[in-house]
Length: 297
Image (cartoon, rainbow, N blue to C red):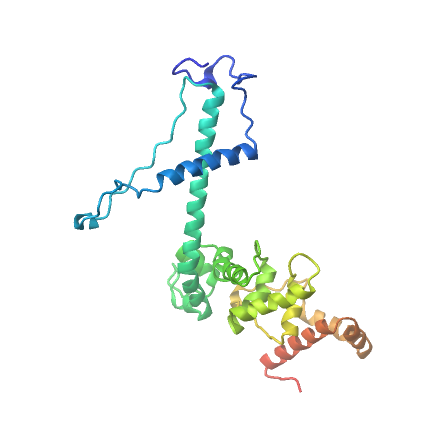
């Protein structure tokens, strides 16, 4: 047993006793047991409101906001207890503090999505950020730069707030809970939600689930589902937010190569092999011609 007031780390032989109150093996099961005990303790203390005496009636004078409570001092281990007991007290308190901190972050993140998400989406949809001046006094051209400069939010986080998380919630409400969505899955589903509504996004997901080969529909399977449901979507990215074409992706060379490949014989074979993919290609080409003022006959 450690001498009173002597830190266990300064003992000449600082190893924990081999038996009796032996070394504590911090395993996932042990951590779960400590957190369970802490939750039970917290539940017992949370039955009474902070700063409220049980049975005390609220009066008119209590309308004043209560002063902020100082952080609760952690329960320190008894220096006279065994090292194993001291480790248990410290580890239990550390994991409990981490659990409370994580819960607060999750709650704050959810509140940010609920409150700021629709407003950020509105700013982007109607390009209102272009009416905001950047630090140089010029209107913003990039939504991503507006997010970073004005709100300290990275573009990826901003798009996750306005696109990914709402889609995850919509799917979960419809009975299709998913742990997360990839960027490419969002690129297929978000335009459907924006142009056709929440229920349409769910319908596309369900259609893709009927023919999926893996645990979740792939972006390609979602694209095919849109074709099957006769939905044509267009991206809503800003022109200046789109990645520039590199030398490896030359539109002229790509078109010339496609023209050589898409001869009647190969097209007929492609239709027999994957008609949905060909139909999607036709829709893309038709939409591009329409946007260029040359609608297909």
